[in-house]
Image (cartoon, rainbow, N blue to C red):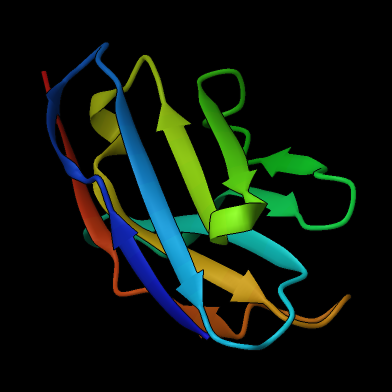
Length: 117
């Protein structure tokens, strides 16, 4: 599976951005998710969406502000980020899990989101 992320950029605090990640390849996708890593910090979970049932999951820091969605026909996942905060600044990575109960086994290249005060 190859992942191509896009949509990062510079935005003022309180603003919005929409990230997208397109997946290509023949492997069956179980889960598509987003993670982020800020300078000097460990990578953290942001959001995920299950292929079966469309269940969504969010990290505590983004719940209520970010929305993950999936366009199954295009094998694309979107992350709508609203009410952005300076602390949301990070490189955002999309990832895919191809086995139920397994970890994320494919990762995109990352897209930088910078939120200014």
